[in-house]
Image (cartoon, rainbow, N blue to C red; front, side, top):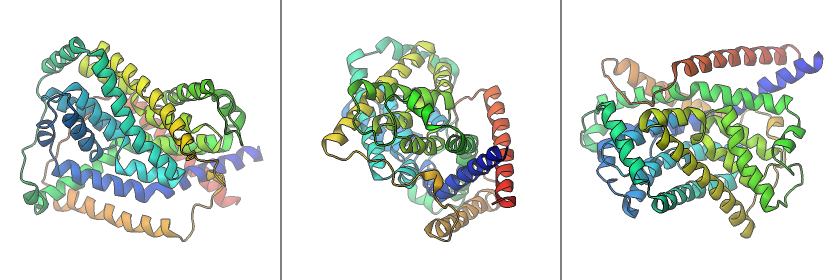
Length: 407
């Protein structure tokens, strides 16, 4: 019984410690994302994304890069761009870039996993877009695209806010109030995913033995660096499977990816896990509501093939240049999280940023309205996730109490 309580305390401390490590990065990323989403409008984006040529693909990628990392927000925005005239290929480029190339994701990966995974994330994001673009050009799903547009037209018009010149927006109190409200909305969109993701990471670190990962990801273990092609192929298929079972967003998946890395899972397998936030069931269901089931399944297959190919190319490419990361020198879960270091001061500084944004959004701008379209979530799923998140808070509080009582 004592062993269980010790592991409970370890799991809770690891979960909270992981979040403490990443808190400033979340705030920085969502603050930047909120400002960009207010100062750059969808109307400005969709004007430049009307064909499937290289220029539209590059612009779709760029606009995704400066957009939100929340999968549900990215789904709604890419749908809106597609509905207003953006090509299917450039809409997919936007979707992939907005969930894989965003600033905050790279910062969090750097904190937990190191520069090779940051490079893999950004290079892989570009490869995902190129692979998807190539497959779309080869398959040419013209009838599916036409049917998807018809489904969106039947769904009615979406809300769109008016546009002002960028300099006028920067000087406007109303715009900064919207930034504050958007920042709060970003947290509202991800708090359940982040809570559950970090809690699961602590549970996995404390309770799940290495043998489990060696079964799920074959030929995995400390010191294993030489993987056959079929081993890597199994890893890049098992990665999306593991992500499908957790069904949490990309930001919540990073501590789990870091644990997989620490358990000896191949670089390809870890990257496939990170890239899998758009091949989970909630995303499949949302795309089906937008475009119909045939197009939704096509997008799922398109992204799955692209992430498998991308993860393998990254692994062999990094191996060719002798850039594959070795196993971490120390286990992430065994670090001392709470101490006086740069993390403490960064968290304090960015908590002040949070206070300033909320002040502009909800005190100074209390009369300012701000609407942003979101993907239609399942009420039952959202209610379930909310209760799971509350259970996570009880679990974490209990574990921390045990840690304080019996250190």
